[in-house]
Length: 366
Image 1 (cartoon, one colour):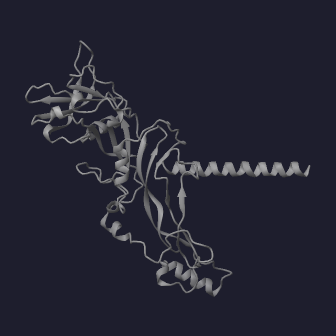
Image 2 (image 1 turned 45 degrees about the vertical axis):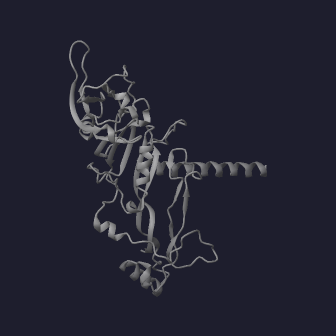
């Protein structure tokens, strides 16, 4: 009987632990802007453009920014990038000079503001095309599709570029700004998403065709990237960047042994491994990161480097006078920075997002 009671108690404890973990997980998922735990396709491939975008946010010169560096695009305040692959069928003819793109974008999270959008085409390295021919590529927004034999589609030009084929490099990526099209679609919650038309025009009337210029047969080589801002990130102002001081040399750089752990309030290493917490299936990169944590005592008198508030100084003073009435000030994060994540959202789309307040930069007494 005693053994049975022990087993029941263990079972109850285990269930409580699982329930607690699930609650924490759901809270984190909600905090990250998701409605449920993403289900990931095991065969999903991460396009190189998406990975490059993620890596660009990890470069040293972007370490203090929470927004995407996109030359030529008005996305200075975007903190989220979603990737959509082309779902359109291949051109009916290899000689076609028009091709319809179809991206399955049907919504963006409520509260997200569209800042920019681009389509990226990967060029084919064809030595036969390395001449001085100029190819004009035009991208049209399909405002209203036509009815075969009755009406023509209503198209609107949204971007165009002229390409000198003699200067094309292998696997070069050409970007077209399609922000007006995505803004138009968002006004009606993407219900009128009829796709886009890519048109190839040559000056010489040669037999240069779309399939000999762009790789439209590989879905990951034709991408739509939509940049949004959910309003949660810090503003990339000069003042904000100047406030982020470099980590001082005397701060602990790795896990601390208990025997050497100082009692004074300071920052310690805390590596979050997404595999250990069960998130590695939908968080594609990084595998983990050092979030750090604050620990230590705020004892009287508070040293200048403790980064204490005026209130903490007074509270510590009163605690030293009467510790039974006034508790000590707490060692807490006083400066936090963002962390870039590449993950699969609850719609199965790849997302690159900068989340604010993910890493402790400085600790202090409050």
